[in-house]
Image (cartoon, rainbow, N blue to C red; front, side, top):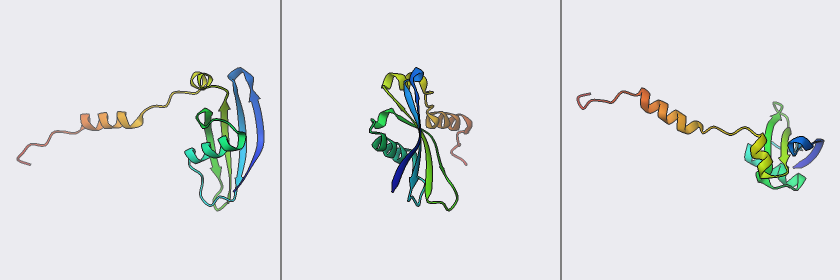
Length: 106
C-alpha cells in the first residue's frame, strides 16, 4: 500500500492542517479508524488529533482519496469540531416509548 500526500493546507487560525491523501493498492475502502491510523502514520501525528472528512474510492478502483484534518492540540480539536451525537441512546429511548406492553393473554 502506497500513501502519497496530494495537498497540504495549513490553517493557523483554527490550529490545524488539512490534508488530501491518495492511498494506492487497496482492494477495500478503508474504514474511518483505519484511515485515521494511515494518516497519523504518514504525517507523524497523534491519532487522537486526526479527523477524517471523507473517504472516496471509485467503483472498481484500487486507489482511495482521503480528506483529513490534523489538529495541533486536543483543546483546539474540541473547540472547532462538532460534538458527536450518541445515536444508539436516542434510538433505544424512542423504541421503548413506541412499543405497547404485551398482556399475558396474547
